[in-house]
Image (cartoon, rainbow over all chains, first blue to last red; front, side):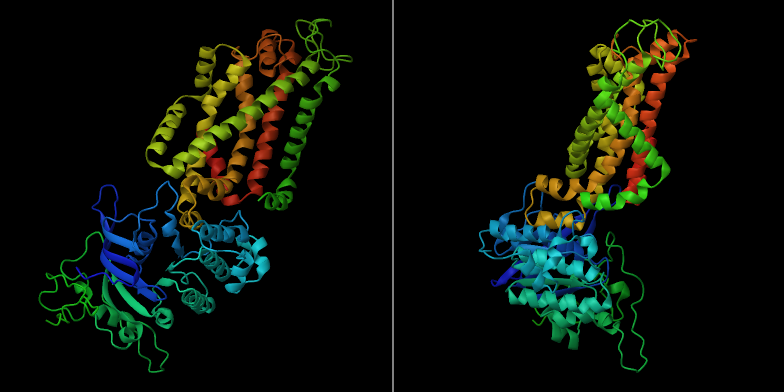
Length: 319
Length: 288
């Protein structure tokens, strides 16, 4: 875990630990030592089951959840948790799109006013926003310009998510964090919104950290993919390479679980058991109780993420 | 928001109780404004036959000092209703602000505000108001202060709960990520979304406040003679028990005001988001 941070990285997360405390219980390590980088103009897909810590990682990157150990830095600025004070202007270049399109817009304010907040954020950072209007941004996300004068309740889930994206874009983010932005949408809207996010991010040269449990969508839009299991990243690599040649048994299981329209009648492979309680993770490799390829020692030795991006004892580091 | 409210009001208004409450409340507001024009006599002049029963010339009868009860009831509205409105506005502002801070900032702010609120809740409302009023000295101003002391915590508690529910909503967080300070976020994203339920609570509370203020005057801790005040009038009515009109008419005035504002509050509650508003009503009833 002492790899040198990539110099070209826009966001670098280094050995991050995030804990949740509950009274009368040991703290839960939702994120247990994660290192991750996102470069400018790159789309990184973060995938994993529900409860594996993806959203916690996203919130920590935005400063919404304080970290216990490790560091997060954005373009050289350490990310500090958000308190009573206003956010450090240098960090307003990180914007987030949330999962629930019904909760992410203020029902009492016009859509245009909420997007204008984003433009003001960019202006406050000293960016040249001459001529940027909420109407332009709405058009860019594929909505009519007159949507600006309406309220969020008047739109569907997919439209609201576009509005939320427009608001985030208005702030001219250099890193966009999307926490399951499509999981609450209709199947027909999912791919549209995902593709839209990719093209808008790449167009503006921003990095995109796209979190989802939908591998088939992530495959289509991510340059790089990171697979998370129980608070740790178990495999990371170029999307096509991971897709064609998954190495970690968990990644293999995830890919095998995608239903194939191949007519062969193959049922998706299933993992035995449920994801364990992150408050009491298994010893050794966190995946070993469910791993079909576990062998002697997996319950004792903790595999580290190797330089070629896999954390599994099946692939001993090339000496 | 205001537009939405207006658009949704008519259906709730069509219910007879709502119409009735609205008419009676409006009627009393007219009386507040126009009491000198409506009252047939000077409410303080002692120039009529004493203890005359209701009849032509003095419809509500006269009291033990020869004053016209009708005129005194009408002038009494100028005491009770504006004071109740002032009281509710002040408790809404104080309780709402403290509760919003408690809910939004949490930690020690929350602990401090809510423990003080619990302290007030621990006493029976009327007893505590009496203690405060007695300690400050009997006057209407002090009675208002006394009721304020017991009235703000219910606003604080309700606002705190609503704000806590909103604090971690995505749109509030989005605003913070765009660089809103906590205060700006509270003002722009949080408070407008708690205003509706609070307005319901305040409307329901106008009746309660009227009742408490009159109660203090009834006990001699509020308005002083010869002021025309409903609670004090009912009190003097109890001294002349067979002269029923002395106590009944000011009592009816209190009753109609309390009922009217309760009906209005219920109508408003139904007009706003039914799910959240109904829980507020329940909370209020539990507290009271």
